[in-house]
Image (cartoon, rainbow, N blue to C red; front, side, top):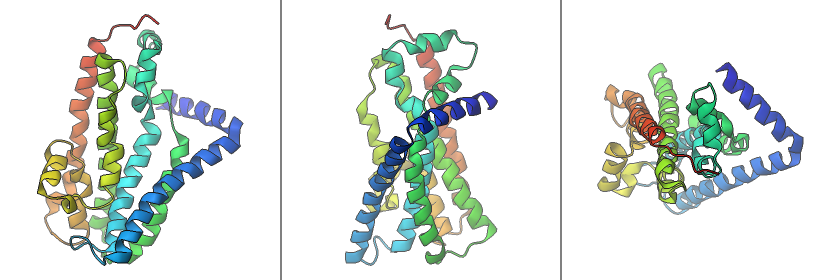
Length: 258
């Protein structure tokens, strides 16, 4: 952890050499997320509810997912850009260094400009928390915390899968963005809105619903099943097969010779 923080400090200092660029990138990330918010706003300006969910409830759901995604994209961005590390031969140097390769890939790129998206999520939180009519007790606060941590773990796992495939394809497979960036867009609304088939897919295949939909039902009082509160922690287990796949990729790695 100390080494990772050292890497983060170096990256942040380098970004601060170009403060105007960093500020503009952060604002750009904020505005990208703001357009998604506008989509929700205009939807509810026409319809008062979607599948029984109110405007404030949808904002709360979206802000949880956006917070998780922003944190994962900020701190696990090294895996999302791993194809560059593979193609330019940099992973050869990573392999011979006396540090874990996962730590080195994580620290290779930390996108502090994603703070712009995180700020958008926090602003939605600030509006939705007091307006969603959720009775905030200790278990509800804990559920909200579990949702954010679980989302961070699931999105991180998806980035790891993306990077692991690069061991076999060299270039990244863009279709996986359906589950990362696409998951962020789908997650603007509870997954039940899209139908039973989509909900099952995001429950049993890519477990986004384990931290977004089911604990949200518990949070808003639509169910009193305590197991729904703990599902985000179960979703964290998704990272285990992702890391196993990463290890398989590392064992099959062959230098590009560049």
